[in-house]
Amino acid sequence: MNKQAVYFVETKEGERLYKLDTFWSKGDINDGVKVHNDSEYDQERFFGSLCSGFKPWDRKEDVEVLEKVRQRYTNSKYGYQTVMSDQKINYIENQELSNPVYLRLIQEINDDFTVKSVEFTPYDRDTKIDQILND
Image (cartoon, rainbow, N blue to C red; front, side, top):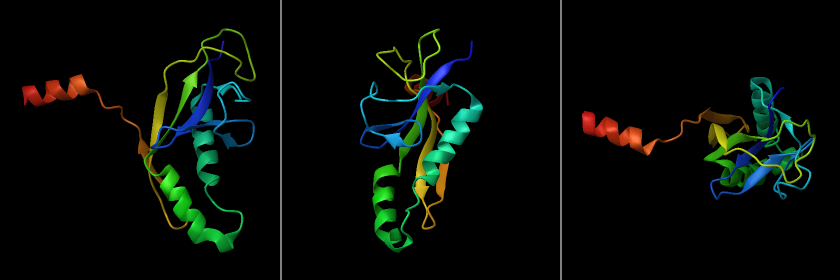
């Protein structure tokens, strides 16, 4: 069976916005969060969806909107959690989820609303200490 997942962006303040059907929302995890496939295809397309949503609808408001977007999403993390269930479900309803898997770190949002990001590499404290001690 295909694994199922919920996708999110986590701001630097720790607020999570989850992928619903067509947009991202900071609602409760059990309030309409859409379950998707845990696939590389979905991982990439939802990150693209997130980034395209940064662009304003009204081009006259670019400067103000850009600053708000930068403040909220610079240094935020994009990732997912898998659904711990063998049943095929469409929306989360009190389902157990895995620990977060972070995929990308949004480093910068440019003047044209394009996004500079890198693959997220979790910091492993023990590995880093071993590297320092062995060098």
